[in-house]
Image 1: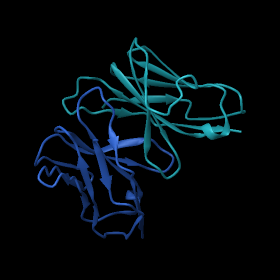
Image 2: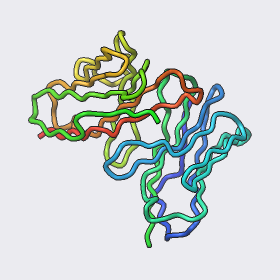
Image 3: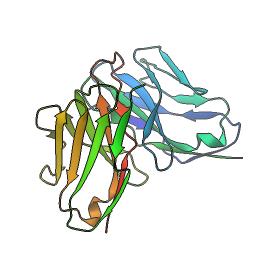
Amino acid sequence: GDSVTQMEGPVTLSEEACLTINCTYTATGYPSLFWYVQYPGEGLQLLLKATKADDKGSNKGFEATYRKETTSFHLEKGSVQVSDSAVYFCALILQAGTALIFGKGTTLSVSS
Amino acid sequence: GAVVSQHPSRVICKSGTSVKIECRSLDFQATTMFWYRQFPKQSLMLMATSNEGSKATYEQGVEKDKFLINHASLTLSTLTVTSAHPEDSSFYICSADSGTSSYNEQFFGPGTRLTVL
């Protein structure tokens, strides 16, 4: 079935380090892809999205490119901040009106 | 942007009581709403999908008689945890789909922390 696999955490980085969180997917159709972020004790916030192959989503210094050939949507940031500490979820959706399919989440901890 | 609210944000109740959680789309009409449950340090588990005016579709393993979902209007869905027990303690999150986004985007509520004593 359709699924999302993302690297297990926790990921621990020093401030200003580079970040990559890997995400790959399996889907029968052509999904839209998302990264969501969850800060402690809060709900999910959409971080970025991409709807077709080669699209690049970006927001707050984070980027991810929809790679159809490798079925991947890796999250990257060139210089992380302490405030980026959160849980990051990769997700896909195949069509409107259906639920998002989430990866298991990756915890990022950034220290100063 | 589209806003989804949940109420209450936190609730503590005694075992055996029922708790209702509301999910509202504040500035758009939600044709479909989803209810998720999240255990500590884990991902979101889809509980059910609700469409306005029809019965909710529950995921396998979710007791529909225990988790009652009502989607009475295009802006409101409710989840009632009946006869709550400590194992029902969790973080419950709803999301809403307007059905109009070209990105198939869903909008999430801030979540409700349920603690059953």
